[in-house]
Image (cartoon, rainbow, N blue to C red; front, side):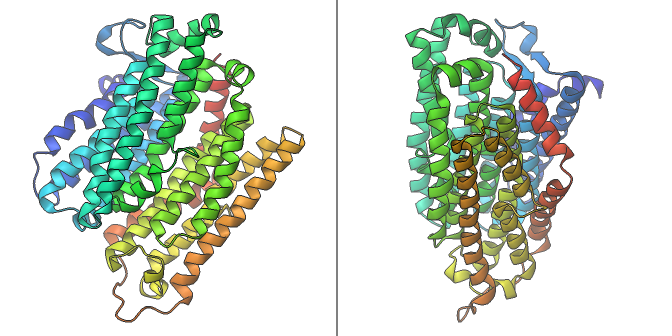
Length: 498
């Protein structure tokens, strides 16, 4: 066991990567699903072990092939990357517990092997982005994630042909974002002669006033913002979430954008350094207004949606606005709030999308009007959605409340009118969340079922994973030592990194 744990940084990546082509050979409903669940569970176990080791002993470096950095590729698990790895692999494993019956209802059985192979590749890419210490490796893993994501989204075409359009739109926009990132990495390499992130960071200050470096910063920030679905680069996300298979939507809502947030934080605080990012190129003045506009405008847009998955998709863009505000504050308190919300929003939104998937399984629709009366026909599923909605709003005892509490404290630390205005904007966005969640609840519980409406309670194979996430979110809203503790530890590490 000691041998395996000593290689945990690479095994958490290699196991799902090597499992993907094997999974493609499986046929039937159970074998590819079970194989994928086992591999994801192993990656989750290694991620937890890494987080524990990093918390106790500090960052862990793993040299691929024994080649020492900066010449070899290095994997690095530090407080931030280890925490995000746990989020990714944990969300993946929880979603897979739900996946067997759900995906068999949406994707032909003959294609399930290929579906889960693409799922494992998406997991590999996201885990790799998080742990690699090589800038070009980030691009490689980003492309692995993106290409498999396009396939997974397009698999929803059996239910709605618009999934193909959504996948194509994501492909075009995602390719633009990836190209920007590649150009930025290339410029960093030209100026530093290295692709090792730590080595680039060491050399960055001496060349930070050059035009190629400033161009690199611009390309990287914009490219990551596109992948992140940061306002106004969010146009690909609502369609992708709305028309993808339900487990894909749940998986991506909890992981994909969070990985891009990780990348933004990593480059701003580790590679560029906070002084350069916020003192020289004035990222606060750029990111803060975008975060506020996203939190307010996307919450308003969510109110008027007639598709439940699309409503939650616009809500996700609004929630990413909170994280953008937190990063732009350029303080330890703000960074803590942002990292904390990565975890809290992931678990709440995944639970919500799983409940919506259960409604779709029983009724065949995610149209809000068509779900009238589902509260009576599917009481456990609907109540799970209500509790998840409370977490999204930020009611006390939920993780959403913890995130917003820390974020409001962080903005009020500014002690100026901008800080007070930010606090008001956050509260106003939360009021909008009450409106769009209540609108759904009203239709689920207080509108009569349409004539001939079908659907009864979802099976336990779907309900149990839903409630694991819903109850888990309340646990982390009450017992906050894990999420708050590791968020604070990661923020302290990043603020002291340069």
